[in-house]
Image 1 (cartoon, rainbow, N blue to C red):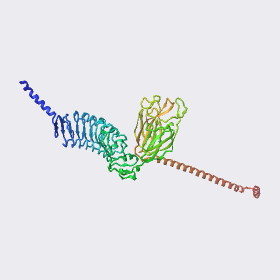
Image 2 (image 1 turned 180 degrees about the horizontal axis):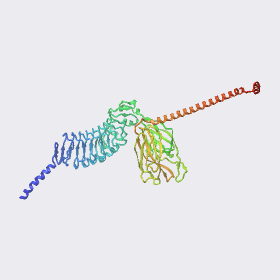
Image 3 (image 1 turned 60 degrees about the horizontal axis):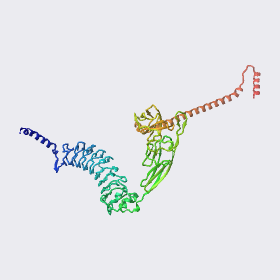
Length: 591
């Protein structure tokens, strides 16, 4: 009997410890309902998630508090949590992997907080989540990987009343069990075509009050008609709302107009002839498009080999046409290491070669048709030196590589790997350029620097010896932005021609110590002063020469006139009258 009496204090101590472990957090209410533990802490003024919450909790309500952020320790080891409410707090950030242990969670309420973005790992671990409520936040960006762990289980997604301009449409396309999706009151202007194709269970889609000018044609919208009869229960009628969008009523939304729906008071925002009219009252023949018209384009362009060629093509139409480019070999041009096609229709070939010579075709296309224009590109070839000789050769003609893939076949030389170009010691008129190359690059013969001012399209070239890895660029204009590229020139053993590869490019701006582009004006003024001073010197020399010539002629005339006078002088002799008569006789004979 003594042994049990000795063990009694120990049992009491263990019971107290167990009671303390499962104690309810301060200010919270804990409910034990049929083996389910609920922890209720709504509107208690909490600044953070209580750290002493029982890890066996099934339902946790923390709404209406002042919680600032969610951390990885807040819900660690809560493997049985099913319902989590964090609504109406001041949460502005979620640490990655904060929900990694919540594999059984079915419902997550994060509405009415201050979230601005969702990172790729913020919702990681929610593999059984069915309801995700994120409305009334300040979301402006959602990572493409944010929904990766809940694509196959999510049934309800609410992203309304945020600042979203786009959402991860590729992820939404894979939510095959989605029943409801609310995207209303955002800034969404575009929906990818085919987004809703596989969402057969979708019963409610709210797109109200966004910036959509059109909806992508999709068979799912046929289920939104008022008289539709569903053949299977797996494809329920669709409740579609898209009022409050600036609809552009042209031929692209004619399919939507042909649906038999009740008038939801949607209106047309454009074109001007249909502005303000109710969408469902506009006749089908008024939904028209205008074919594209190319208004401006480059006709002919002559560039030096190695320089950038900019081919421009501007088109108008309704809807706004998309511009494509076709190379002289009839291949479609896409963005690559040497070619860039911009949204405004401009095609830039960064470093031209002799293979780019020919006729490029600009194609402007929209739903109403297409229009084409031809541009002639001529390349002034630079002679290349063959390996081991001093003879110059012309580059061989062939197909341009601006449309080819960036992958290189086995028989071609390996491209130079990615390198680094940096700018330092920038002043108003100079900058130090430094670059690095890897040991695996081909043997470089020399380097070339190309740069130009942002207000000047003329490229400036500098040739650098192969041993240098730095160069000081001088005579720059203060306060201007420069685009500078370093090129490596090496011998291509396969073609015996000189090949050029880009080491790297960088942008920099000179210091604004002096007014912009004053060097140009000072140079112009200096040249003018030299011409004026030279003209004055030449004029002075001419005047001096003329004065000398005049003086010479005047002096010569005076001497000529004095000779007869000297001949008429009488000589005075001591001979008396006879001598005088002899002098008169001599004078008479001379006359």
